Amino acid sequence: MKLYETWSTHIKEDKPFVLYKKPNQPLVKGLFQQDATLHLVSTFKEKGFVLAPFYEGVRFYIPFDASVQLEEDVALEQEQLVSFGLDFKLNYEEQPAKANFEDLVGRCVKGIHQGHFGKVVPSRKEVINREVEELPALFSKLIAAYPEAFCYVIYHPKVGLWMGATPETLLELEGQTLRTMALAGTQVNHGKEEVYWGDKEKEEQQYVTDFIVDKLKPFSGEIQVSSPFTKRAAKVMHICTSIEAQLNQGALKTIVDVLHPTPAVCGMPKSAARDFLLREEGYVRKYYAGYLGLLNDTTPQNQTSSQLFVNLRCMEIEKNQVNLYIGCGVTADSDPTSEFVETVNKSTTMKKILF
Image 1 (spheres, one colour):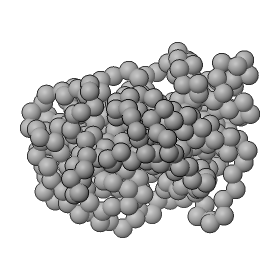
Image 2 (image 1 turned 180 degrees about the vertical axis):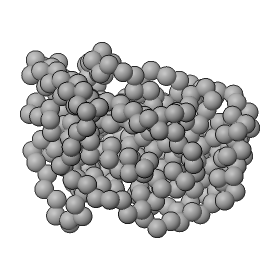
Image 3 (image 1 turned 30 degrees about the vertical axis):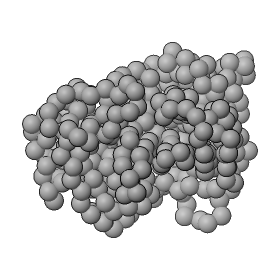
């Protein structure tokens, strides 16, 4: 494939690039930057593929006009990953991770009961000591396993290499029509049509819906909200609500700033939850729970379009290790052990892609 050959050449030459596949589409597109400049996003009038951190780090983009653009149809059969359930065994190395995360969840619940926030989304980093030798093969497995997700691999020599498959849209803006989603709650995808969601998951999802609608009201006099439905993402499922707004004022930068980070990856009130996580998580999220996607692209109808996604189900690939980032939503009734199990389920599919 010419797309993957160009990718290999760019890696050798240490130049930035991104490959991405939109949800439910077989077409993989690539932007291959022709030099190693780090282009920063400041006004949101920039045009290209953007990657932004959760909090700490640079918000940069790979420009359309400074890159070679390639695309190929890589229609693949869906990867049949080995099924997994809620039962798992911890080896010796995992025991400290379990204890540390359960302690963090306990502090989250305590903060909720003390009235500091209504919901908070703690996360953890899981390090896998492995060198990835065939990156194109790994990306092919990823897009086959997550056909309904936005899949990507992005590299910049000053930032690093990230790969992921996210089910969550931050926003889509075409002309003055903005579309987004409220996504929360998690359970294993058993393939059954009927799905039962408990009060904890429903409450968590309603937090996200209310937050987004409230933040969009100053910019739109017309907001439509769907009924909650189940959104499947490989081996897990979430509750989802679709939201559409007709904008009457406000720049893209302002809207992104008020939506990011969403309650689905941070909590609410946003500032209190974010400050707690920055203080208590004990590590830097970098680009996990940030956002990425197309900024000011041009549609076939010659309209300006932006499509940004929340960076979930992602991995940071280093020379001799792979870092997985996973989190879970915590409310007043959360159980620390159950929340750790949720993070294990979320990481399992990525591990099956790696091995």
